[in-house]
Image (spheres, rainbow, N blue to C red):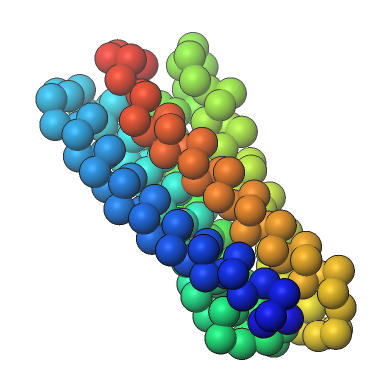
Length: 170
C-alpha cells in the first residue's frame, strides 16, 4: 500500500497543514472588524468543523505514509471518532449561534455541512472497521483514500464560507 499511495499521503499531509494555517489567517482577518457576536460565533463553528476535517486528513495521511493498511485503518478509526465527537460538540454551539434558525439565509447550507460531516466521519468509521477485518482489501483502502479527498472538499467548502461570511447580520 505504501508505494501506491505514498505521494498522495505525503501531499495530503502537507496540504492539510497548509490549509489549516490559512484557515486561521482567514478567520483572524474576517473577524477583526466584526462587532456582531453572532456572526463571529458562526464563523468559529464553521472554522472549527473545517479544522476537524483538516486534522483528520493530516493525521491519517501522515501516519499512513509510514505504515500499511492496518495503520491506515487504525488512524482512520481514531480520527473518525474524534471527528464525530467534535462535530457533535459543535452542533449545540452552532444552534445557539443561529446557524440552523428558521429564517437564517444559510440555514440549509449549514444543515448540509453538519450532515456531510457526520456522514463522512461515519463512513470513515465503517470503512476503517471493515479494513481492520480485511486488511488485504484494495477496495477498502481505496475507499478510505477517497474519504480523505471528500474531507478535503468539505473542509475547503467550509473555509471558503468562513472567509465569505462577510454578509453582516446573517
